[in-house]
Image 1: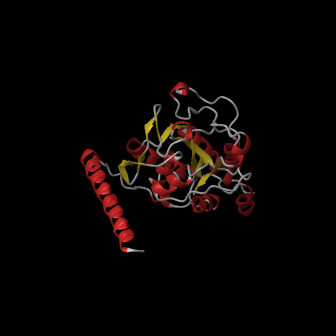
Image 2: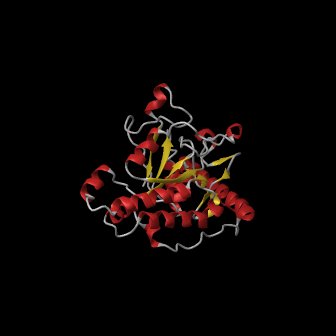
Image 3: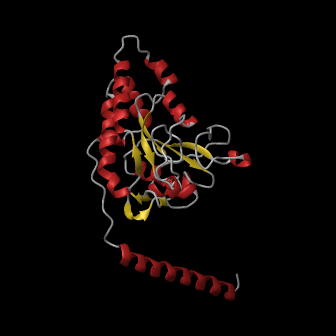
Length: 271
């Protein structure tokens, strides 16, 4: 690179640094000092992985009810700060957890068979609000759908998770029509980052990213075309996976994937 090119590059770098410092100062003045730390974790169960919890539940080292209760308590502790969960089914989830515990007290329970056929038996999870869950809201962040509650069949991925034994806690926030890089809409407001509540959680599956990053959910389902799982995972310090086309059904989520979009809009779990 000649001298002129080097000077040009250094000038651009200097301008970029000045812009970064100026915007940091402006937004720091507006929001600085207002970030509220999340309450400390009071139950170590919420720090375990989904597979570890599933194994302990199968072996009756811990009850499903105790696990579900731990995550419900954590959600109640943090959701006022991060605004991640927007509709819940806590009481039903606890009833389902007690049913799992009763099942596991039977004498003929085959632990290895359960591990194969119902790998997440008794483990709680959360899901993005654009998936249809009977009895819970599915607004997709649209004010025109503000009062829309799903009354039909559950989305395919919800059925699949139920078949695996997982217990749904509720649905989480998203960007309007799943189209933006932050999870903010005129129905639920903005989801905040658990590490700094003045920052966004990413989008469009930001509710999932935030609630898992806050240790208030152990595993969750999102949707992704161009990074809607992966970017919130990056923003919130967790792992997000978009599987290959055709592996996870899109049926029951909005916006509906039509034509070649079916190859791109994928629902999958944050783990």
